[in-house]
Length: 111
Image 1 (spheres, one colour):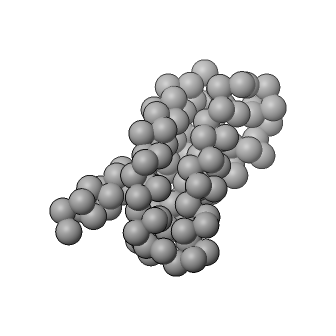
Image 2 (tube, rainbow, N blue to C red):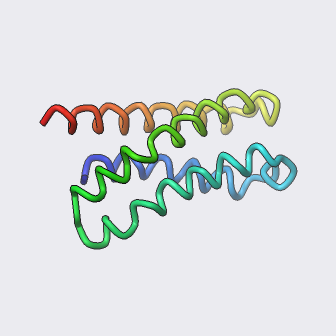
């Protein structure tokens, strides 16, 4: 749970970057990505507060497909939204974090 939460801090930072970007004010798809990231993180909040590792991992697995889809969507729309390095790095950061989350969740299945 701790390692998952650490990886998800990067997802939170990308979500925050998107939310506060001027581009998000003008693009519905970008806002949808931001909302999906937020919803994923919010869904883990209760388990985190209660330090319930089993519930945290179960919820993280349940919602992983949506998180991965939002990551793909962001990578696809990013060049249309902005080619600025900040957006390029946000995509890479999100991809890296979500890959790590998926890897950790896969590892937890094997234990």
